[in-house]
Amino acid sequence: MNNDFPRIITLLRKERGLSQKQAAMELGVSQALLSHYEKGIRECGLDFVIHIADYYSVSCDYLLGRTPDRAGATLMLEDLPDNHEVHNEDESKSNTLITLNKKLIQNSVSIVYEILAQLNNKGLTTEISSYLMVSVYKMIRTVYSANNKNPQAMFSVIPEMYAGLSDALQSIIEANAKQIASGKTADGFQGIDSSSAPNLSPDIISKLYPELAPSLYNLIQKTEEKIKKLT
Image (cartoon, rainbow, N blue to C red; front, side, top):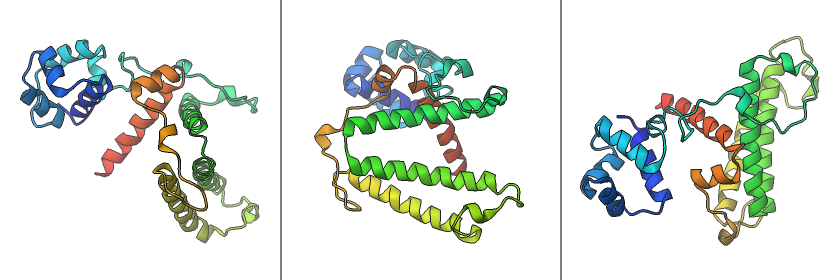
C-alpha cells in the first residue's frame, strides 16, 4: 500500500465519530486487523480498498493519496474560483502553471483568513499576516534580483543580509503564532480563547468553503509531497 492509506482511513473514521470497534464490525473485519491497517502494520487487498471506499463514500484514488478530492476528481484550472480583481491586462496571457498556482495560494489564504475571522484574535491575525508578508517579501526580492542590473536601492536591507535576517524573523513570528494559538501570551498579544476555536476537519472545511477547499487540499498535497522528498 502506501503511507497515505493508513492516515486517510483513520481520518475518515474519526471524522464520522466512529470507534475502531464499530467501524471494524460494519466493515466485516476484526478490530485488530483494522488497527493494523490504520497503523500501516499490514497491507490490505484491493477488495478491501474498494469496500472501505464505498463505506466512506470516497474514491479509491483519494484513499491512496493520489488526489485530495474525495470524489477522485482531478482539479482543473477552470474549477478554481478567482475572487481577486485582475489588475494586469496581460494576465489572461499568463501560462496555465502560473495561473493555477496563483489561485491555489490565493484561495488557500482566503480560508486561513476566514478561520482567523472566527477566532477574532488580534495577535494571531497580526502574526500570521506578518509571516505571509515576509514570505512575499523574500520571493519578491528573489524575482526582482533575477536581473542583477535592477537597482537594489528599492530595499533598505542589503542583499547579503536579507535572506538570513528574514528567515530569522519568520521563525520568530511562527513561534509567536504557535504560542498564541495554544492560548499563551506572545509578543504582547493574548492567546486565543480555546472555546472560540472552530471545530475543523476536511469534511467541515469542504462544507464551509466548497469553492475554496479544493485549492487548499491541493496545496497541502503538493507541499507534503515536497516535504516527503526531504525525508
